[in-house]
Image 1 (cartoon, rainbow, N blue to C red):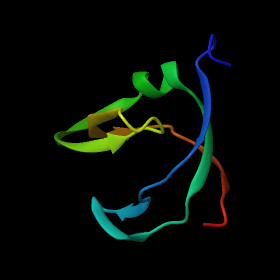
Image 2: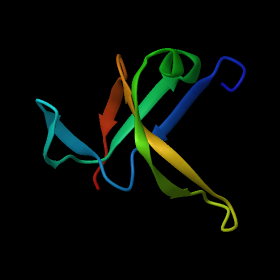
Image 3: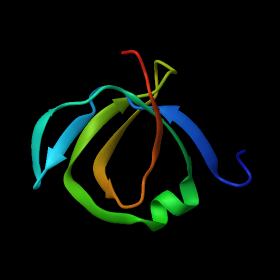
Image 4: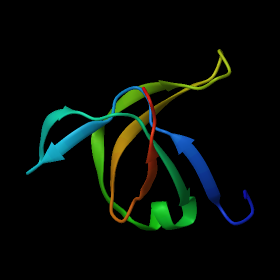
Length: 80
């Protein structure tokens, strides 16, 4: 529901388990359904580094930071 800011998606290109601020291993991809207005209201930290992120359209890419977000919920695991 775009008007309400609801977005459903899957993680990809790496999902990591973090303990005490350190990456301790890989995690399976997960499905999420979140309100993006809430997500951006819950940003705790933003990385200085930027990573090039490709979109499904081949001519489009973005350089984006990593975000630390509180109260983000995953709804299911995927098989991959």
